[in-house]
Image (tube, rainbow, N blue to C red; front, top):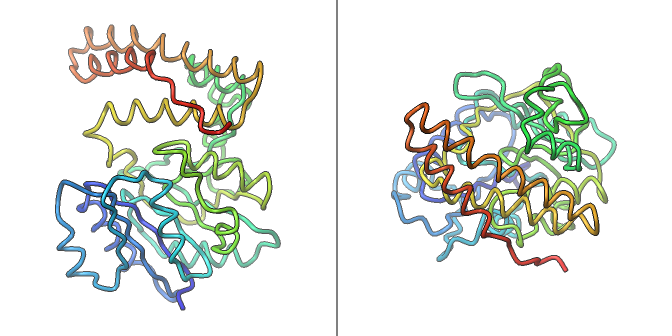
Length: 310
């Protein structure tokens, strides 16, 4: 039986997924694992190279794009490992991170979710942990105040990333690129909430886990490369739209009354100020992509997802 089940979701980027799997086999030693690859009805590329090079990979092939949360849960249902690693396909192992994380988990006395240190492609530090949303840090994020006060715990929900990133910390949210935990506990909490389609599902997942099951740790003593957004680089509207929808859905689920009205107002004010910022930046810099971004943020004013959490 495998010690760890690695679940990877693919959509239209078999090239990234192949490189990810290659790095896992290259660097993972002295620990048994299985890989479950869930393809969300990819229309671009072919799976042939992965199938030929890695015949032991377990496939789930969806006939429609069921979303990130649902695809991961499909993998969870057939996983056999003692532990689960939810891993983005735009990641690359550069050391034996799986063994390192597993050994750390075994030293803990309470159930936990663990995230490792994420690096950019040039090996510089990438923001890897986030604080739960509240009115003040949402103001900091939406009005760019976190850029002005990067070390402010009140206004910057990413503030932990500017301190010593080489020490283990208990945190609120670890990025969905790498989430490690006990399979039975994750199964008991029914994995991700499938009402989230793309984005914010890991925020909700971490909140539910921390509220009811255990602790969440950032473990920076091992690192992987995360290309960050590589899957959606060519799908700007998809990314902008679903980032906003996912955020609003998180508000719908976890905020009520006056707090919900406040966070929603802050969210839309953040959208409002970004339209002229991107438009003026496009005129100054001559970048067509910024014109598109300004237009897409304008379109967000007309998008409000149905509340599925009533």
